[in-house]
Image (cartoon, rainbow, N blue to C red; front, top):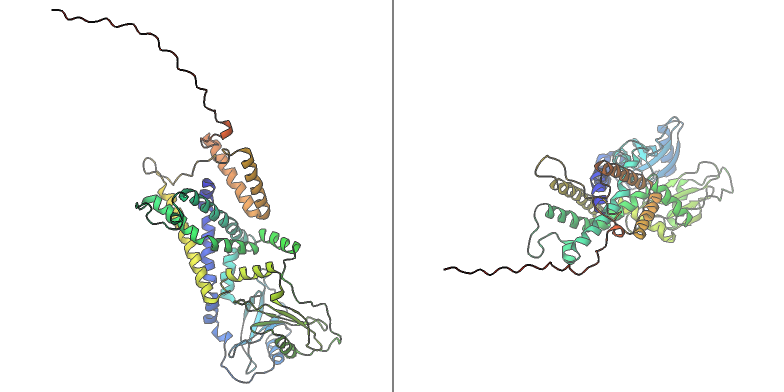
Length: 465
């Protein structure tokens, strides 16, 4: 385990560090957007507002031939209305979900600006750039492997480090486990102090690291698909409002204002997005967007011809696992508890970076100080070979299950083992000097000591006069 923790830490830590830095930036993007796009997001407050239908027509007129796909009405006085358009000839990025967004002053009914809006979060360009860097380094689908590699390994490295530290400190009590200060009156120095700080910091960060790893894997390319399949199999998916009830009067449209009033009457308040009908019979779909605690994520379908509610799905009625997935993602993004959540994620990312730095420092301090210069050596191999066959079988079976669930983890682990085996073969030592217990020679049976040969009597010496 010590050798695996060493190799994984040294080789995976750079990817984890990039994810930590970009994630730390991302959690503060709401404040960045409010500062950078103030002219698009805010207008002078007024008491009167023009109908939402008229604002849609104004936005569509900005791009002749376009059609309004969805709209986000203002939540507070002074907010603009955001209209997302399907513009002919505009080919949105399939990975980012970019759409043309027209921002309308709801009081004067005038366009105040145009930008790109990305995904269901409605992110603007700066937040999207940071998000994509965090997700795939702007390398597209190939780049997503980097973030999945980090998320697949960081939990394993953290739990392995905990097990190693517990094994080292179990005789010194909980204080030694959670505190890197002096123990038994003797302060640690040199590499021992670095390792102690690295391990104790890892213990304090453990819960947060496991959370970001688990939630990050749900967005990943390969493990994320396995998570999705599992949720579908166990009916843990997020329910949506039924849209199969079509309009009884095709071509009759009660209007988006009527649908919005009905949704608010059904209890859908706060930030909303309205998905407009794509034809003459489909319903309006209105969804709450508030991701702060307590989560407001109700959804309603409303008949196009009457604007009346035909189905409502309450977040309170979601399956428990769907709720946990929603809360976990929002916590990961720094949204669930507002500024406190942002500070928490910043501290977690900063602590993770410091733990990585301490890990590399301990490796540097392990380097030879005499003879030829070099980096610190890896810990001896052979721990797996030293296990009994039942334990070997258990370890291999567990590794196979993890490799199936997290393919990037499995492939990278296999590469680690192959490289390590080649290095051991070239060095002529695949066991690191360790011998399996079952192959160790037992103690030789005791036998009575052989009798000593009799000694000849020494002649007596005499003093001569």
